[in-house]
Length: 551
Image 1 (cartoon, rainbow, N blue to C red):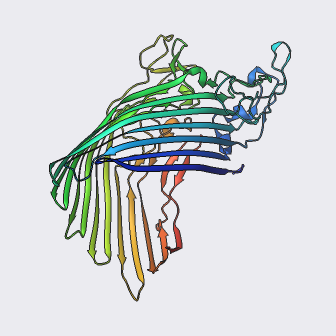
Image 2: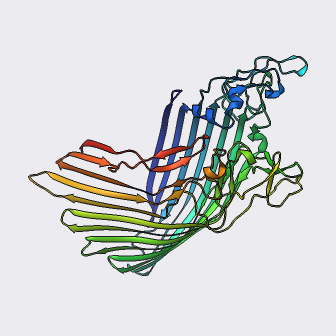
Image 3: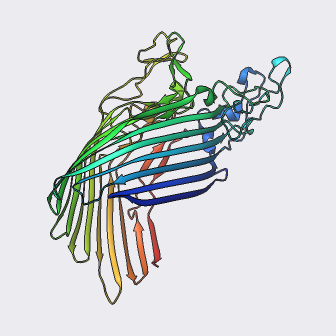
């Protein structure tokens, strides 16, 4: 750690509820208002190992066309600083019928507005700032990087020229508004035995974004203009007029059958979606074709992805409620999935989002809770999942000026032509972070002696193998080095074990515990977002004692 880090988070949250009745109908209104401010900073010196770090921290003969420069590197120290302000307001009103009616219904309306102000400053520019302008349009002092400055008349909190160390700076505001109307009806086909439920929700989701996203690319020896450097790699979001609206219906249906008072099975059909958004670098051109014309413009926006779920489940109790067995079998279609891209060699040095593959997810989950004898409880849960990519979209040439317009991009000629691997991956590939099997087991024994309540507990968990990326993202062996923040790594399967014992009396509780007793150092996530291989390991073995008092 080369620079200090802190995270200051403060918020004001207010919520209220009003209950009432209109005849037989119950009425509920709820509202809430949140104001949150976050100020955080952290070290980013490891970026000095990044592919493009020398642009901000070193120069030499030929840099910026200046053959007289002597090879020089400055401090690798780097940090980031983020200031966020979030204003969120929501209101909901609903009416419902009495619970003992054979035909029951609920209906209502929902409205929310959310506004997020974000100023994030990546400070790894250590080449000295330019301090003068030359005569007749010449750049002025040499061996320098011009400070960046926000675009005039954009929606920013901190306008103007930024600090000497600012290399990337975004000052943006995103606003989302949602209005929805919903209704659901339950009808007992056979009272207390067979119930059907039908519901739907109509929504309208409005999304806007504005501000300045600044980059120091192409700012070498750019003089000291009054407004700072505003290179072609910077983006005026106000000018892009980023505004989008989506509306529609999402519905669900459910059939519940109480075979016996202690045995229930159900079928559920449900729909969901995740709203789309905008790309700050939308419109930037990349991947020149054989004719030298860029074939790909980063999309300014991406749309929602959608989920359709079909599920059969059961909830049961046996042996005078001493054994509980629940579970579900499901099949989900996840379509138009939102995908994050980052491939500096092909589509630029900034992340962006797009819509990509479709996935079919099939699985089963189950849990058991058994009171074997007085004081002894056994618990177990397991899930099996299979995620499979069902289509293989391709990256399409979307630049009308390119000879390859409207066709798949198969070559990147920068400067020589090389083949392009389909970034969306092949049919049959699994989705990211989706272990095929997970399970946990736990046993707890409690007893009473002389007014004390001691206990002993042991447990184990297991997570199967998974992958950090979907699609055709290369492994580090295939890429040869860290060239992208989206390399594909395998998270191996791992198991952990824990145990505890303790005693309680009246309001007091003392517990001795051990976590990850085998001291497994398995990796739970691997990332190259910062151009190094960074792993998140399991927390090592922990032994401890805790004291508690209830009052």
